[in-house]
Image 1 (tube, rainbow, N blue to C red):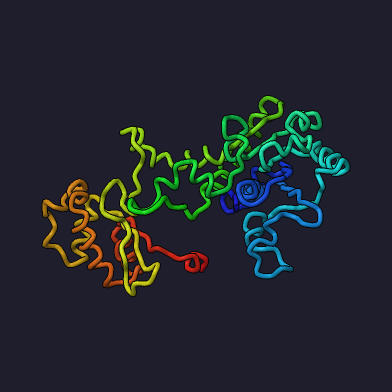
Image 2 (cartoon, rainbow, N blue to C red):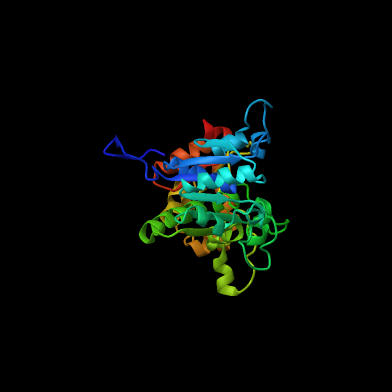
Length: 335
């Protein structure tokens, strides 16, 4: 993260903040990495002789840290400590004395089993901020249940609202449960820093993966709030209208383009597609009409987009101010 004023580099907003990172996998590490990007000194605590489990997960070389580990743990320092041993616990508490934040995403109850709960940490440092990340928080009927990305998606309603109506609930590829929770935790910790500085008191931050996903999918909750019925799976159809992605030439698995069809953009697209004869047609003149005749809208769009590559469609529409984007695969994104 680059922060500057008038082109002159500034100090990072979290300079001087030290974080002891007891997290693993994605939800916690993605959170502390955000804080490290903002200037915090993040010290990752790992198990002696083994390290973080993701150092070797999906690794292409057994002697080199995996990309899985690196994409969530770059810009951090690391030490190894056996928190199950008395010596390791003593060293950790000495580190807590000099730290601002301790963050963990262990299984429910693990910090208490280490005898390193919030009350113990406060005895070592009465201004410490303690952040705990759990599947369902630390109270309630599910607090004891372990959770991972796909479990959190299932329990939050995300999977039930994703996919095609005729198929099973679908997993959402981006890490809305893990990295989405990490974002919420990072925001919570920054608020806790401000609150601690205002009050001089220690702070506790608790983030639930289930709650984090529910917050991210509020837009899909609107129908349930309106009807008290479950949200249906609509695939690529938004609010019951025609799909928003269309296939392009040469017809590969990711040769698609996403387009917003609304207002004046529809008439412009009709002219580009050689279908100016349909401008003003009552079947397509309003958003409500296009929803009613979505199959015909889809056929019109496909006939045009299949005659061009996704990047050609994107350029033509973007040049006219129409919201549009090519569906890029991950290699294209990296390039």
